[in-house]
Every structure is written in structure tokens, then in C-alpha cells.
Length: 112
Length: 112
Image 1: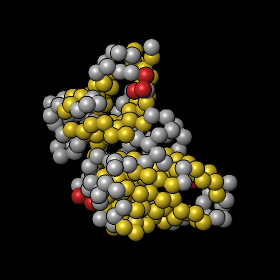
Image 2: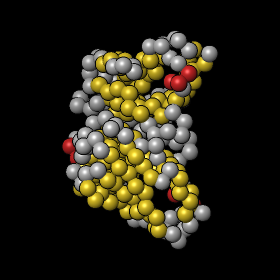
Image 3: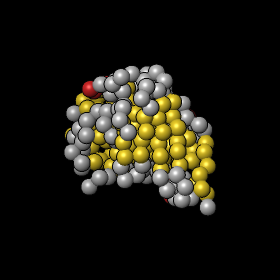
Image 4: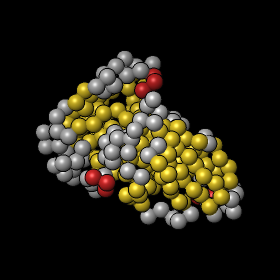
């Protein structure tokens, strides 16, 4: 299994809602990542987890809250988002940090 | 952080070799060069990486100059399915601080 699975594929949420994005991998990887990608722009790194511990937070606003409950799962909790947070959110994993990463297909988020 | 410079776009005829250049003149001695591609609306896909030697795999070849200030990704026989944005990335940091930061990439259009 060489897949990174993200759910849901699409999400529409209001500015007062609370929602979560989920990411799962069963490759035994110990590093997991969240990226954000706006239209026609490259992916921007948000968070890096290494061995279930947060190792990098790229100054992401607190309305985005990552969680890594175990080595296979990565969540991104969302609350009080703004319309400008609408984007494609990509999850990736790698054997350890810095090695080749496998990406999921992303969750396309629309904030209304 | 080592920055990369790539042409904004390139065209290639199907069946011909696609040569995608990348400048990374500020690269440090222990920083790897990674290449990913992103086909429209999909997650990025790992292609290849290298440190100083040329590398080849089933997808592509990577040629790194002796001074390591630039590299070229070669797709030997481009097909229409290779139409994508290609990102050249220098991995920065080590250990849990290691991260892949995407640049603006090259949009490769393969035509009949």
C-alpha cells in the first residue's frame, strides 16, 4: 500500500463551523506533513510531524490545529476560518523527515 | 534556505526528450535536490532526487553539475501524460528540521 488517503475530498464550511481534515497512511512512515495550495501557486508547508511530535510549524494561524493521534493518522482541525483560507489542503508522508514524500490527492476546502 | 530558479513554462513534442533546467546557486554541500511534479488537480508526485552524482530511475534522469549550482531533469521520451508542473526543490535542514519548500515550478506542456 503506497497510498496517502485524505478525507473528505471536498468540504464547504461556514466561518463559524468547526471541521476536521483527515489523512491516513499505512506505509510505516514516521514523518507526516500538511501543505496548503492556493490556485496556480505552489504548495506551502504548514506543519511537519516526526514520530508523532510536531517538529515544524510554519507560523500557521491558530485557527488551524494539527493533531497526530498515532503514526498512521494526521488530522487538521479547523475553526473560525476565513474565506481566504479556501484552498487545496495536501497531506504527505515520508519514511522520516526529509526523505521522498508521498502526497495524498488533497481536500479542496471552500470557506463561505 | 537555498532557492531555486526555473523557467515558467516549456513545450516539448511527444516522443522527444524533455530537459527541464533548475538553478540552485546557493545550495550547500549537504543539501539534496529533489524533483516533484503535479498533474492538474492531483497531489504532487515524487520523481527523483540526488546530491552530487547523476541519478536515473524508471521515470527520469537527474543531471547535477559538478559545482552543484544547477541541475537538469530529463524525461527521455515525453508523452502527453507528462504534461504537468515540475518542481525543483532543495531540501533544507537536517533531522526533524528537514523540510521541502516548493518553488514556482515549470509548467511543461507536451504536444502532439
